Amino acid sequence: MRKEKTAMKQDTDRKILSLLEQKHSLSARETAEQLGISGATIRRAFRRLAELGEVRRIHGGIEALDRGMDPAYPFFLRMQWFTKEKEALAARTVPLLAGCRSVFIDGGTTTAHLGMMLRDSSLRIITNSLALNDVLSHGTVAESGPEVILTGGRVNRKSAILLGPEAESSLDHFHADAAVISGSALDDRFLYDNMEEAAAIQRKMIANSDRVIIVADASKFGQTAPSAVVPVEKLSLIVTNFISENYRIVQELKRKGIEFSFCTSAELSGNTQQAEAAVVSHLPQSSRQ
Image 1 (spheres, rainbow, N blue to C red):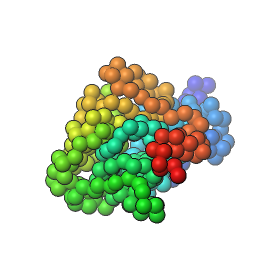
Image 2 (image 1 turned 30 degrees about the horizontal axis):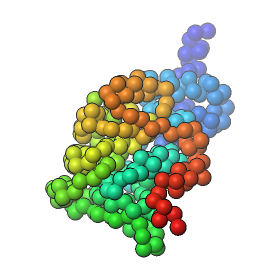
Image 3 (image 1 turned 180 degrees about the horizontal axis):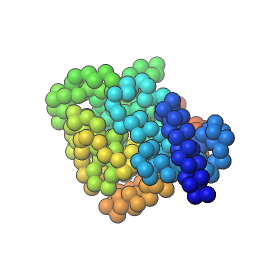
Image 4 (image 1 turned 60 degrees about the vertical axis):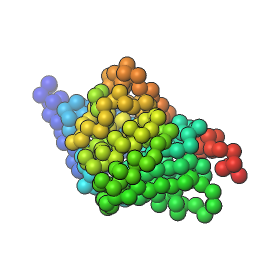
């Protein structure tokens, strides 16, 4: 009987991994429907595969380990993944910028979504993100809007960012009230990025700002990447979605003095009206006309 149960679990695991090869992520609901298995069984399988290091848990499901960590995926493709979650994280970040006059924002798909919500702000935004610059500079016909300062540097087409010594040195001319950083991974010691050149840009932004806000979905917690950006003690606040697997690391980061802003279930489900209301309520009065 025990052998039969083990065989059934292994069969379920194989089917889930097979589905994951076709898609970068799976929700418990869609997997249960496709395999004709109960949701409880699927959730147990997801937990088991995550514990084995085969997948990464995300809100409501799992994702392939290489999806968020592999910079080989082009930016335009990554922009299409988990848009509801990224919009929710971006909407959560907007109120945190109230009172800021200038902000550093690094390159990333979530920060590009943030840019869409800052089109009517009066911020000065210093960035190395070509996508963010495009969103902020060409996404509106209004004369008002944020002042965008783009660093110089070499174009990295896959990530749609500017890198290199020119990009780094240009940041020496600025100081910002806050830095909004995405990063590739985070554990209880360091913030990480996949590329050392990108990490160097993030370090400079962090060093030249009064407050450091990390925007990272739950799948990035407990992970590492090739380049350590800064020790977590340099971080001020993390915007994320909470999953139970991250409880220990969240508590450790809180113990080190880092604040958290968690997205609600309603926000993660794609309640765009709630997200837009949060944005509008924190924009300068003149920008709401």
